[in-house]
Length: 67
Image (cartoon, rainbow, N blue to C red; front, side):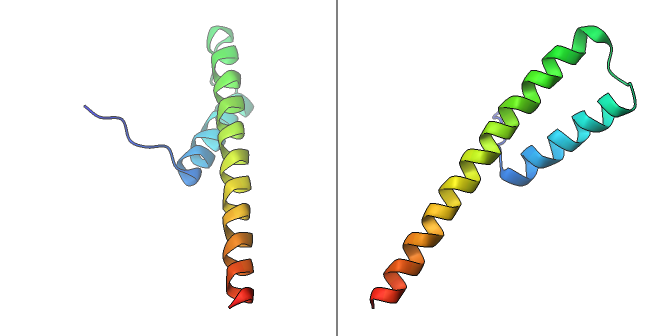
């Protein structure tokens, strides 16, 4: 079975789910560090996605202004 490609919205949803579990003490201590590491990975992905999108939008607007 192929893995679904991670999107910004999927990452945010997963972060929110993990945070909810942490806040409601639904994770045992063994799973806590794994989930915190996953949130860090997802935050890095989101930060990169936002930076790339910002750069693309600036490029599009610059190209548009030059025409």
